[in-house]
Structure formats: C-alpha cells, structure tokens
Image (tube, rainbow, N blue to C red; front, side, top):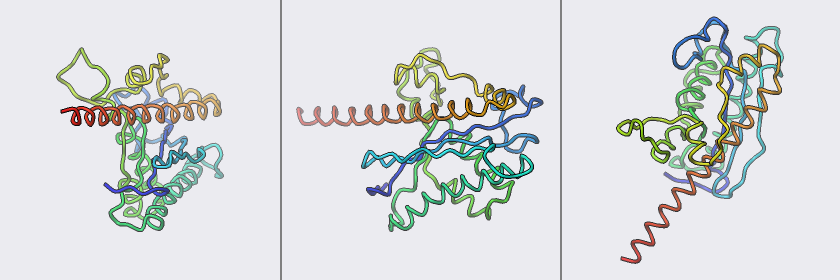
Length: 237
C-alpha cells in the first residue's frame, strides 16, 4: 500500500436511515435499502489527512434540507450531494495523487462495510444518480476500515472465546476509550424523525463521528506502541 502527504485521507462517516413502522420488528438488521417506505435521512462526513494530522471541517447532508415535493425527490437530491462529496475525494486521488498504485480513499466508522457503504450504493442505484459502473467505482473501490472489525482482536471476549467476530460499538468504546455511556439504539432515530426532532438526529450523528475518530486514534496508538515494543525487544536481543 502506498500513501502520499496531502492526498491520502480517511473519511469518517455515520449515516442515519429511516425504517417505516411496519418494518421495525424485523429480526436482525432492520434497515434494507429496497424496503418500500424506507429512505436515507442523511449523515455526517469528515475528511482527515493522517500524515499531516489534519482534519477538514465536517460536512452534513440531511433530507430535510433538500428541495423537492416528495421524500423521493428530496432523497435523490441528498444522494447527489453525498456522491459529489465522494467524487471530490476520488478527484484528489486521481489528480493530486498521480499514481495508480496509490492507496484509494479510506472510509472509517462502525459497521460501514455492512451498512453505510452498501446503502449509499443501493439507494443511489435506485434513484439513478449515475451510471451503475460509476457508482460501483465511487463506493466499492473505497478502502473500508470498519472499526467493528478492527477492534475485534483488541477488546476482551470471555463468554465465547472460540468466536472471532465484529464487535458492537458499545463494547469497543467501553474497552478502548473507557466511555461508560451506552449508545442508544438506532431505533430512536426513527422516533425522532417521526416527531420532527431533526436537530437531535444531527447532534447524535455528529457525536457518532467523534466517537469513531477517538476509537480510530486509540487503535492507531495501540498498533504503533506494539511495533515500538517489538522493535525494542529485537534490539535488546
């Protein structure tokens, strides 16, 4: 993998997705981008350039801020703006990177490989935001760094030690950054949307991005400390 200052960057993100009442009792992951009545509420995104330790300002895109007479029209406008945001990242990689072997833009967050990236692709495909091949390149050529997976080998598991699997955000946060406050269920977002409490949704999502950044930073420090410790051991021997 190759990295380059001022080009290599991580996009921290968190999305919120609406599930209609008739589908809220489905087992497992309740959000499905092909369920009638469901739609992307929006999300918070922040580029971070790790080599320079330089974050850009957060960008937010919300369905209630879009023009349109229907939810479908508003969601389409929302998805266009999000797609443009990611195309900006690809333009930096293509133009400023000027190296086909340079590592692609990285996306980081909890459950992004399972939910966020597939949802962005699926809903954009449904609304015909761009040609399917272009959408695939935009979303599935990103390098996903799923914190649920990355934390799995670090946090303790005593009940089922024979199973190695992605961990919940609450479990990772508790053991990595010592935050005892549990993340409320995502179902609360649907209730907030039904109530028209949009600012509360935005506040929650901003907080989720901040938590992702803290866990990412903690994992990075732990990785680097391990490397430094091994290096000292090798020199002593």
